[in-house]
Amino acid sequence: MTSPTAVSSGGGAHRWLALGALVVVVAACSGPAGSPSAASGTPAPASAEVPATPAAPASEAPSASAEATADPGGSSEPPAALLIGTDAGPVAGDLGTFSWDGLVSDSPWIVQRSGNAAAAGARLRVRFDDSMDQTRWTARWAPIRRGEAGTPRAAGSGDEGRILIEAPAEAGSWSLQLEARFGDGRRAAWYWRVAVDG
Amino acid sequence: MITRLHAFAGVALALIIVGALAAPAAAHGPDPILGGGLYAQNLDLKYRWAGGGTPPAAMKSAINDAADDSNATRKSKAPTFDYAASADNVVYYGSDVPCGVNGLACMRRDPPDWFGVWFRENGHRFDWGTLRWCELAGGPDGCYQVENVMLDELGHVLVLDHHDNFGDDSDYGDAVVQTYSRTKPKAGWNAHAYGRCDVATLQQQYDVANSSTLYSTCLDVPTELSVSPSRSSVVAGGMVTFTATLGTDGTGKLSNNLVSGRTVVLQQRLSSGWSDILTMNAASEAGTYTGSVSVWATRDYRALFRKPANEGLKSSSSPARTVTVTAPCRQPCPQLEGGSGG
Image (cartoon, rainbow over all chains, first blue to last red; front, side):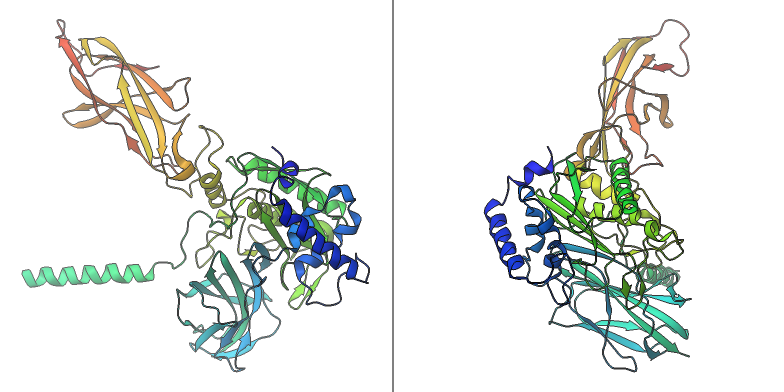
């Protein structure tokens, strides 16, 4: 009926292997277990659960940690998205909310402190790194008011192929949100700040 | 004349095409689902605080409140959540989170074995601003509420992916499980109940809680209605009891569910068409409704369920059943048959 019993019933071999790997990794680490790794490139799931491991009694069998360190898909985060057509060449968007290989991350509508410029009505394009092709995309513009995104409005949508977005006709500061799906339940959102010239 | 008709048809066609192109691109409906499968219906999922990543007291309280919110508003057989120090599922708070560079919180699930939820630490500095959790920062404008965000995470744990909104976000209140979290005091920042499109997916995936549970208005589930008379022939004025059964005719978990506590009417066919006679009473058996009428003339009868305004069920009517009067009325017969429920 309850999850604790369920944990011991499934995927035991895999779990023990993963747990063993975790123990090796922890043993290899010389820094304090509870402090964040200085290397920001450390695989996030592992670093998030490492602090839990030393504090947990052996009987608690942090299989949870083992699960968290497993990286079944290899790529644990969405690709970079580049906005093309502003005055600054390709600009990487800020990654927002995503669902990717079992990890779901929640972010706000990100409004950067600074951005790039584009002419009113300019034709912009977005492409992804890692040769990834989306299966579906949706774009929205939101006016930026006092540093926050206002009410958004649709700026286009499509399936495979080029992602083409028209800059707003009105001059001002705008936030662009692009949501894209890639199949296998992978989806993510990116944000750019664009100053539209009148 | 023919030319004018052609011109009119052309204009009408053009209007239809323009209308179709102008329709919002984003679909609105039940939340999408995450991969990885489901937990068992009504499972009680326990969670504990991660060692080395224990939330502050105010945050613990908000997280437990969110678990209560989820339990109270799931309106389905989705699992419930409860804190237990011995649990295998973990909730972590701190700086070491796997949430990506801009995540406030994140979740990983592996049904039926395990889930984890991570909250980034209060005061974390992103490139675009500083994270303030309302429960830890005194509730200033611009803060994110832990209880609301945890409810979003628990929705993910159950199976919900982010809701697809209209372009202008006018449907933001239809879901807590959103593509972006809102800060105080924007509408939705402190929602403590699943939205109707969150509930719709929970009902599709886990089934409604019981036969009386209202179906989410984010759904449009077909229903099926049958009716049978206690007698198919009577002497004029004889009493006949009709028993109707209302069920769902949807897909997956929403197929063949009995539906109780709704309004089902009994109708008779007159020369002018179908006319209500009475509202049938709920019987003791789930999904069953009864009503009795005195039958004075041979007539067709049927049961009718009208689409309610407060839930996502479609209308349905039963096939007609004929009750034959075998001996005619010897006294002045009433113009319309009377009847009574139950």
